[in-house]
Image 1 (cartoon, helix red, strand yellow):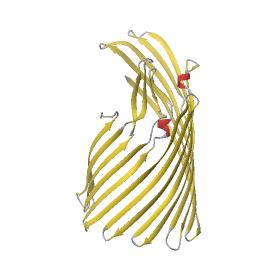
Image 2: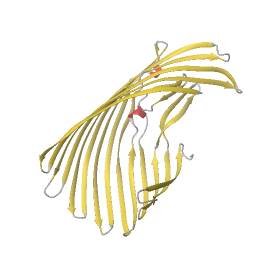
Image 3: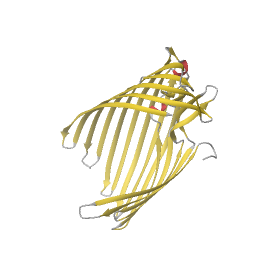
Image 4: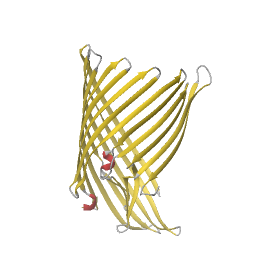
Length: 373
């Protein structure tokens, strides 16, 4: 297998914003930003099919790919500080994306002598616009000099479309052509408290998130109808043993949602029978992490253990022998355990030359099926 790629990229970014001081304790701001990303590639692929080390046939492909990304984001924010030193901050973000990704494949099948058997032309067309609206309010109240409480709410509304067409020698392929629409709403609220006393710190929080996801396909109907809520606690305990040593322990529970690009059923052909695509049925991963840290001067020792359910992994192979087709998609594992230990220490060579070294050990176990790792 030999693959030569010749990509070119053109990026343009822009950003414009201002803040206006309404009063000594009130500020409003507006920010507009975005980018235009154009990626063009010419690739040549040569696949040799062998039997008993002898070349039976060869597939040569010439690929022309264009990938255009456009993004526009608008943010409006307002912050105000009250007389009791409490502070409130609000943000509203509106984001628009659009991705167009046409690819043209010219396949040539050659026999063992290098003679042309047949030719095939494939064209994939993909247009993926989506819009995200995010609104959040955060309120922070210092109750005492060493006690601070904060709370907030957040709402996310997303609309995502994916229009894919695959054409073979001028004929549209129904198995690879579809229009999908995804709507997702996320509602979240949290409360958090932080208490400092002597050389110690206690920080704890609780966040609740509720997610509603609907994915509808013109081919399969409703592919995803997900509606769930979960609590995500967090806790940090930190104790200063003396002026030179500190010991910390933390626990947190988090959610890892699948990216829209992993869920979109796009198609990228490696060869006529091997294709990369997305997985609309991806589930979010939920992880719990326990971490211990010990600081001795400028030296930091850290150890961490994480268990995650429904871990999202990419490039998982599925083979369909009836169709002689291999599909490579992102998928969910049953779970994944990760243990890591690290050390960070400074080394000063001279008065003007200092360095910091890091060393990390990682152990990981992935479980795909019940009882197997």
